[in-house]
Image 1: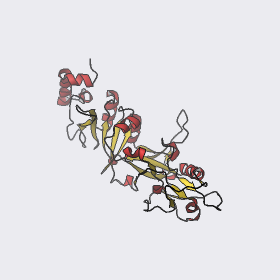
Image 2: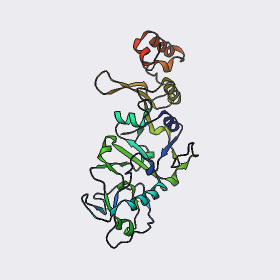
Image 3: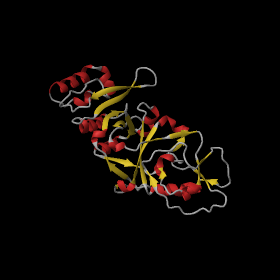
Image 4: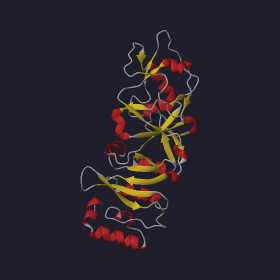
Length: 300
């Protein structure tokens, strides 16, 4: 099984260089991230909590201390949840992935409007241990405050990964790690609200990289030169001739090009212009004789 991540080329370069970001919950684009409603039972004082978090344990069914979605109470609010999420921001980072390799919307939202890339990961690699599938619902979850006060066990992050069905198209899977297992990067300029934490990621857990339809030639060359002697496959997601679809065109197999020749097509010829021998000859022939090659490569 594979997991995928839609990224900018800058972020792809960082990942190929061996680092991937684990992001704090409040830095995500969904304001309801890990933020259930919490009911404070009558007579129970609101109090400072000292919570431990479990980033690996799976969610239980049914989830403990979860109230019916139609539960109503004057003491039901998200004030305590915001304080808990503040603790989470100081404790955990999340890597967001997807099971959907053909999402037009995610290409647009997360991969620089088709000018970025999509990474395919091997989900069986140890790096992805403890993966959490998002629970998509029509209703925001409501938790009983007494759970956080009375329970001696750690709060399972998996039981907080509940999102509105509006996000269901993302088919999201998460990997959660403690920030104490990550390392902080120097603060960028302009200064971000949340510091950047990363983990080292081994190249062997990357199966392939797919360019977007609009990925520039210069950026394609940059990535090609990084992966050409690796076992990472290289593809292009091109506009299909029919329907609102993309078609995948292979550029490089999951072998170094010194062991297995790449595929030179009208779209990939520009990557091999300077190659010695027949690869370069075939690439130059394509660009000279194939009208479509000139069109997709913006060659006059």
